[in-house]
Length: 172
View 1 (tube, one colour):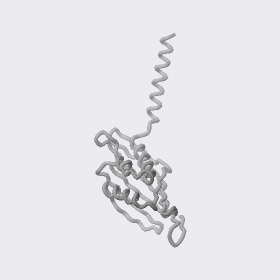
View 2 (view 1 turned 60 degrees about the vertical axis):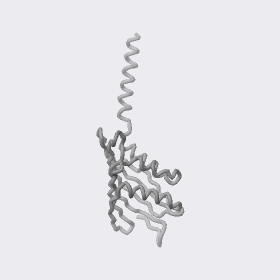
View 3 (view 1 turned 180 degrees about the vertical axis):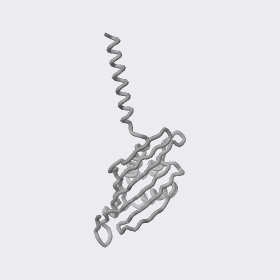
View 4 (view 1 turned 90 degrees about the horizontal axis):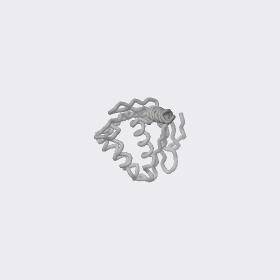
């Protein structure tokens, strides 16, 4: 009787470990969520290192920005430029930028690298008024760097869909 009970407990533990192993969040997805959480808290914490610590110092971001008028602007920034942007955002006390994940479109996690693609809603405000809102398609590549998961690359397509500041109120 004791052997059967012990065997059942071992089987239950093994099955629970197996099931929870599949339910664990992938490191690359954790990084995306941490990036958004820490970025959203930046205005209150003023701790840019909470954001920057998620990125490798060789980080690159390719950005395509589609404005309300439909004009496309493309740029590439590195870690230093990204750091400067965060610092500038903190200094501008009237500015607030918030993001939220709408959908995780794709995840792929390997032993030493992973990628996640997500639709992210954003809203930037100046003096409490919506300066811009829209959607970002974010494709993040993360890698194991010196024993820690870091974001090493990002491809961003940012589409502006509305603004309450300017000559008109516009929504697509």
